[in-house]
Length: 236
Image 1 (cartoon, one colour):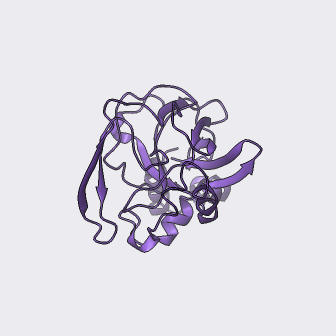
Image 2: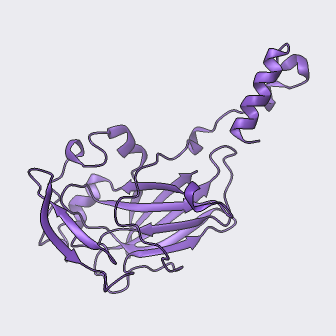
């Protein structure tokens, strides 16, 4: 039962003498599962592009620390896996560049556009791709740990769409990385020339100091023999 239908039904029962008096047991009422609390939404940002390729390995020629990314897509109402959801991922490379766009950069001090631009429209697809969730709600990608660019903490963009749903209803957010892995990754080639990201949570142009949102949107990351593995539940 969808939320709006539940609310309508429950309200009607209460107005007519109480839910239990109408034969509805307490255990039939919706009890949310905290593990499936709706994933926080954030803006798609300016660099989303249409028609990404359906593929698992989105690296192409981009060098960086290997990062396997596993999503579990769930219905946030029933807390059940969603099969057939289209999960789209895009993020910047080790130098902070997105593929297929005119990259614009911010001045770190003023957080205003600096006028610096890098055009990657002739390379439209690196670090972009989509997968369709399986019967367990799983969609997995092979990528690299994202680099940072001025004005933002390092992040990964995600867009997910229910099977058969309209594009306008897509779920969109941005995911963040644990700070301790930033310290490790950005000391490695090819990231080390740029060093650690000087951006802070308080100055991030999207989060603007929202520690609660950052915490809820931080990917669980573990080291593996071949790099890093990140896991995240998308409750939509």
